[in-house]
Amino acid sequence: MAGKNSKTRHTIQTQLRPSLPTASSEPATPEDVASEQANPDITALKLELLASLRKNIADIFKRELQETLGDTLFALKQDLQAVRTQFVNDKAASDATVSGLKGIVGEMEHALT
Image (cartoon, rainbow, N blue to C red; front, side, top):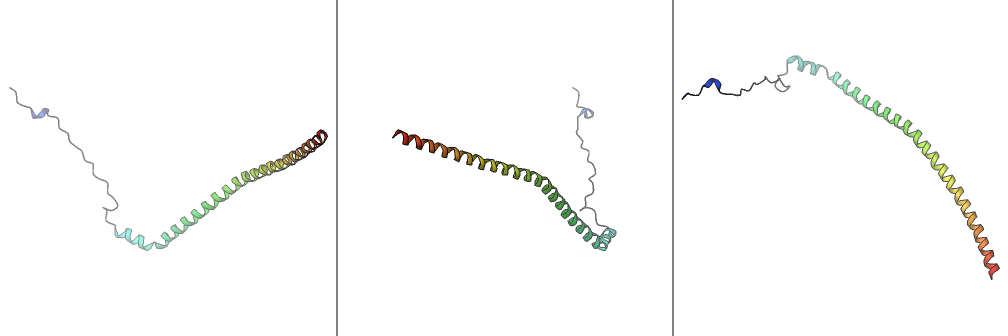
């Protein structure tokens, strides 16, 4: 009988990649700390610019929506006013017709009695 040959065994080897350094694993260099401490005005300026940009963008969106929706709302308002006017005219015509019919019915009742 032949013995098992160790050369033919299937083995799985994992290959590990070196991990990427993370911000927490790297110690801060003295130059980084010094630059962060030396530039609080730059950080404040960045925050102020971001706040200003956010406000400007919000104002632009608001103005654009008002212009776009304003035209649409104005057209809808005109359409509703036209419908209201038509409704008032139709109601007046219906009231006149009903009054005329009541007069005719009244005359017919008087003639039949």
